[in-house]
Length: 212
Image 1 (cartoon, one colour):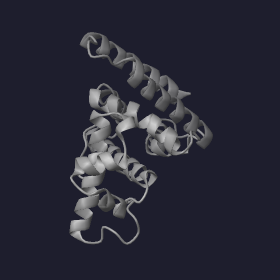
Image 2: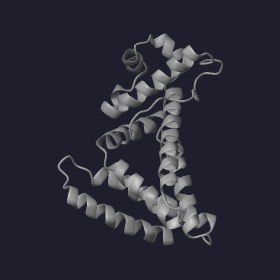
Image 3: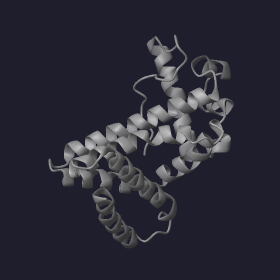
Image 4: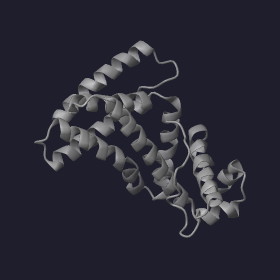
């Protein structure tokens, strides 16, 4: 998952980022925070480090994002927007049948979790979210809400008779499988043939989960 231009400034302090220069600065801050986690560690995710890497003063960063938690929330929104855009683009290229759309979404997820920068980013983000909300799990749940919504909608298209509770549980199980694969299946020396086999197995398993 590559970092991209931030198209809005959701999460900034109220009344800031009204002019183009302000929006550009807020965008630069979020983009820098994203890139820091993609290449560094969560222990380095400090307001001062991000300000230094963005080439601005700490006070300037805090003008837009007064607290570290505000910046984390804005980063989560940015990441969610990126995935929404990528999902929409992939589904536009898919066929019209629910099965084709479901498989297109799965392929997107499986390709994404096999990218080293994606793996690094999320493995650094998870503990950062835990520390930010005292390990209540609230921020982690918020992070994965878009993915669960997308999966629920795709499963509902496959199985219109499934109840809302069933859809939620199936989406949660499928999301857990995908995130688990990101942790255990990817290594720098992984055999491409084995990864391809694993991908096919994951798609079969995903259909079984969707079917309940």
